[in-house]
Length: 436
Image (cartoon, rainbow, N blue to C red; front, side):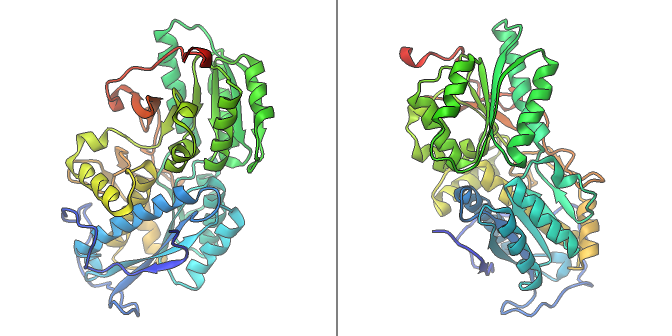
């Protein structure tokens, strides 16, 4: 069930029970600046939670919203905002409808109608860009999570911050993994095809891939932008087949990813070194529920988190189990991103001790959240969250920021980098369809 534009009262009574730890990060614990916002719950601070809950990215947006909800439940159960006399946090959840213009409208309503103190969101790059423009206009802090387009933090805005990686980091992770493939299989060069949705996200990914690939002497044999929402991509995948590419780099959201993958399978397009997806639809459980396993077998996917965390940290294992029990799906990078965004918002409020927008902006700018066994904010696995002068988390990615997996026997096997590997090996060259 999609929960659109709802107000979630998050009190001390929980259905999502987790072991709790004290709030760290050196926050001021005085109550001198406690806000007495009118609400049925007493001291309450509102945070806008802005995600695509309908449209092409709906299942992805819902996972972000679930992660944020789960984190806020834990924070409230642990005493709320201690520097504001234990104020509880309420999430006001709004829907971008997976559309940039609707993201702007929803963001403005959160600010003018719902009186939120700051906003987290909004996954799609175009939505992050448009919504954050509104937040900047109203001088309300906007913590971007999900959108990787360069422009999110390149416009000189002082109320906009991004936790996650940029498109450059995403592509670097795949290119560095392919460097390892080239070494292992004694490949002097590669030929590659680019196919991508033609908004900021896909176009950025393709541009950066081409720049890094050209530095290595690889040859581009196809550069194919695609308009979102096509019902059939047979003509595009036949171009890939005719190109003779070794590798295909893909950037599509869920609906388009389904259409593309089915077309690749239907036309038996063989790529000896695989499809390499920049996350997007291939990170969405709805994709895997909609296509047959043979459609995505051997595909490489760039995941925006450290997938080894579930195995390596007991508290992450607990959260993963609670995600499964409460929301009915395996914890994903999207759930982790929503959780982390909510915790960053909480830390900013705890540090500022007030809902004053300028004080919150400065508090976000000065956050220094380090990953440790005790720190529960970094479910996404980043080594730290420290923002630079442009508002970009300087630890938001890079060649070791995420995980490259290959689907083998319908399951993701973590391969690159070595720090995130589950100990498996890549299946390469990939068997032709006629040999499977």
